[in-house]
Every structure is written in C-alpha cells, then in structure tokens.
Amino acid sequence: MVTEWKHSTVVAGVPWKNPVGTASGTFNLEACGRFFDVSEMGAISTKGVSPVPWDGNPTPRTVESPSGMVNAVGLQNPGVDHYLVDELPKLKALGALVVTNVAGHSDDDYAQVVEKLADSSADMLEINVSCPNVSHGGLSVGSDPLVLGHLIERLRPMTDKPMVVKLTPNVTDIVPIARAAVDAGADALSLINTLVGMSIDIETGKPFLGNVTGGVSGPAIKPIAVAMVWKTRQALPDIPIIGIGGIMSAEDALEHLYAGANAVEVGAAALVDPLAPLRIAHDLDILLDSRPQLAEKLRKGQTWR
Amino acid sequence: MITETTPTTRDCVSKGFLPTRRPALVLEKKQLDDGVFSLAVQDSYMATHARAGQFANLYLRDLSRMLPRPMGVASVHGDAVQFIFAVVGEGTQQLSGLQSGDHVDILGPLGKGFDIREGKHYLLAGGGLGVPPLIRAAQEIQSIAGAHTTAIFGYRRNHFADSIVAEYSERTLSIDESEGNVIDLLDRWESDATAAGESTDVEILSCGPNAMMKAVAQWAREHGIASQLSLEARMGCGYGTCVVCVTPTVDGLKKVCLDGPVFTAQQLGW
Image 1 (tube, one colour):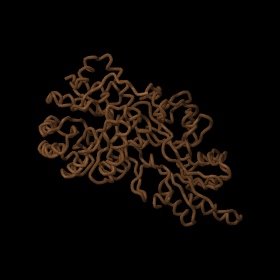
Image 2 (cartoon, rainbow over the protein chains, first blue to last red):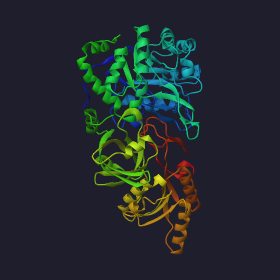
Image 3 (cartoon, rainbow over the protein chains, first blue to last red):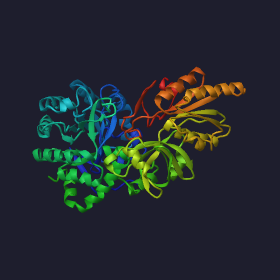
Image 4 (spheres, rainbow over the protein chains, first blue to last red):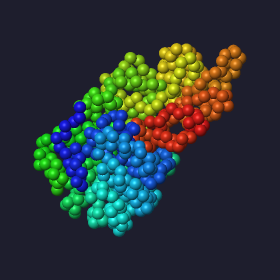
C-alpha cells in the first residue's frame, strides 16, 4: 500500500509528494532500498558523482563527536558513466524523484558531469560546491562568490533541469554566496553541507581521520543550519530552499520549514536508522495537519518566511 | 533515540522490507573477564536470520553518542542473540551497564557472513575479541551434516571463551600472550594431525586483529589451505550507505559492512 500523502511541496517548480528527501552522501540504493520503498520519499538526493570514478580519502573516514560525527569520505563514487547505467535508472524504475548531486575537482569536471546528465532521467541536479573533504573543487568553489558565480553561469545553460546549488556553512556570511548562486541562475539552494571539523586521538597525538579534517554533521549542527536557512530566506525571499542539517525528527524538519525552507533533506539520521528519512516524512505529514497555514504555503511553493 | 516500533517500521516490514532499528529486550548481561561482557537480547528476526560472521548494530539510548557499535553475533538460542564485547570507551561502557529487563536498540543482521559448507572440517582461528563470531560459526557448523570444527583461540590473558565454544566445537586449542600466538597453535594442530594420521584437508575461518589475520592467511596459503577472514573496521552506518569502512581488495575498494565483513584471502590479496 502506498502512502496517501496529505502535505506536498514544490521545489523550483518540481512537485515533491512530501517535503522530505534524503541528503546526498547518506543514501545508497543497494543499502537503503532494502529498508523502504524509495518512491515514498519526497526526493532522493544521490551521492555526488564525478566525471571519473574517485577512490575517496584514506581510512579511517569517520569518528564520533558530541551529538554528531566527523566524516571525510572524500566523495568516493563510481563515476557518472556508471551512475547513468546503474543507480539512476534503477531509482527511476522504482518511481523515485531523483536529485543528482554533482561533484568535481574543477569547473571542467562539473561541466563534464552536467553535460552527461543533461538528457538523463534525473529530475533535478544539485551542484555540490561545498564538500569540505576534497582537495580541489567542493568547498573551495563554494566559499568564493565570484568563483561560484562563474561556475554556475557556465553550467546553467547546459541543461533544462532545475539546478540546485548546495552551499557550505564554512563561510563568514552565507548570504553573498547564496546571492551569487542565484544571480548566476541557480533555481534553488540546498543548505547546509557539513562544517569543517577535526578530532585528535590523545593517545597518539595524531588526527583520528585519514584526511586529518572532516565534515561535522548530526544533531549538533541543527541550530547552525536553521540559522543559515533563516538568514538566506531573509535575504532572498523568493529562492526555493532545501533545508539540511541535524534533522533527526519531524519536529526538527518543522524548524527548518518555519525558518523558510520549502523542503528538507535528512542526512546523518539515516546513518543511525535506515528508516529515519521515511519515518520523519510520515511524522511530518501528521504534524502538518495541525499547521494548515504552513502546509498550504508549502503546497503552493511558498514558504513561511 | 527510538524506543518503540513505529507505524512506519510496521508498514515497511509488512511490504517485505528488512526491519529497521528497533528495541530489543535485554535478557542477560554477564561479565566474562576483566572488561569483557556478554549481552543476550531478545530479537526473533536476528535469531532466525543471523549467520555466522554477520553482525548487528547496537545503539546507545541518547543521541550524544549516536553512531552504532557494531558487534558480531556470538551465539543464538531460541529467540535470544548473544554478543560478547570489550569495554573500549564510553559507549561500550554504557552498554556494559545494561541489565536484564532494559531495552537496547539494534539493527541487523548485517553484512555477509562466513561461507560454510557440508562435510568440511573448519579451523576457527580467533584472536581476542575476534573470538565471538567464531563461537557462532562453531554453533552453526555443529548443525551442518558432516561438518565439524577445531577452535584455535589466542587471548591476551584469560581464556574467557573456551568453555563457551566447547559446547559446539569438538576440540579447542587456546593460548595467551605469555605462551605464544595463534600461529604457534596452527603449527601444533598440524603436527598433531600429521602424527595421528588425520586429514589436513581443512578450511580456516578467522577473526581477530588484522595483523593476526594476515599471518593466519599467510600460514594458510603456505599450507595450501583456503581461508576466510572477518575484518574489523571503523564503521559509520554499518549497513552500507555511508562509504566509511572501505578496505582494499583485488577488485578495488569494498565496504566492510556490506560486502564483508567476511572476505576470502584471495579477495583481499593476502
């Protein structure tokens, strides 16, 4: 039996059956598809894909932190060509709405991936200019408004698909970055990616992670994420926003929505319970019953703030 | 975080999906050695489906330490599943404080276990806290026609699992650090078997520190014996989605939690 969702949303003109998606890097079909029907999610944002396969960072790649974790996977992925014949068609065959996360080490990398995805069955593209764990590209692109604007201006004409730009919190002020992405043609923003963090083993005096630094996620970062969604919404009243960061429950999702998000993505929660994204979607569908004004705005593609 | 089975869980299970994280009743907690504990929990799904070498995620009650503690299944009795673990930090310290009647959240069984066949003789080469999954292997092999096991366990000090594995394994050779190591025991087993005219047509299942397992794999290769090795790795999710616990194999990087934890020596190139 398929859930009859009562409360939907719209992100950059794309209707989502509910406001909850999976966050990139925490969803893998082979692993997660064993636990729930992926078509039930508002959207599935897949692991960042690069032009060629990437091996990622040396292990260890994660360490627990208070109410969170630090990870440095380094976008290990089998490359866009494999994605196009494997995970993407499988997800589409299952009826999922797919947001394809695009990774690169250079502008040319991003362009190569977008070119290959331009006529694919992906529903939306999410340009990952915020990964803190790759040496070039990622965060280094997403923390400079001029560099980011230049990249998005190049990518935007390459496809008709709605283009989401995923922003980093590792900046003094997220608003100029967000504005640069929007001015360059971004159809929506997703925020936040992980915060740069580090953990040291006091027995050895050495960093825990093979990559030395990593990205912090989990409930610890929720207030930071909510503040950044709110600030971005205040500055840019009309741009669709996908709120990400520390969402472990439907109540947490509501905070993001009240801050001005059109939808949310669930990341770290999925790592501690495979069913968390769908459970949060179900619980939110109930919580929105008693919040008709918010529900009505989301349904129309509007937001609370 | 989750202390009850939600409607979402019930709905997904009714559609044939795997059961997600769920609370399990603690049936018994026992101290086996200094800092080593046995925890038996009630979970009929795990009890029915867990094969030797597979593991479960155990979770702490609150989100301040949110990542799972993956633990190999040590034995199954009815709908009770036993884990044996060492206290290595605050998380395992909390788990060691569980008492019968408490609940602990679990997810599993996870990973790919040992490939066990009929009619074979298996040497179970274990070291330290790598021993528990081999107890489950002995238990499972005991129920398979014509198959049997010899346990070859190395301990730091106390031989805490000998009496447990003796229920399932025909023979146990064990050693502690003051006496020698698992390779010494494998040599002893081989000379005993040769002297007694017994077959040395065996396969090795191993779990323990990686350095020990590499030595076991090398010993096996030198003796023309196949080996399967259950790797330990620092995991994130433990179920295959976060790509944290990868290991190099001859076919490239593989996820220890999903493609393993059991790999053959050939797969690892050991």
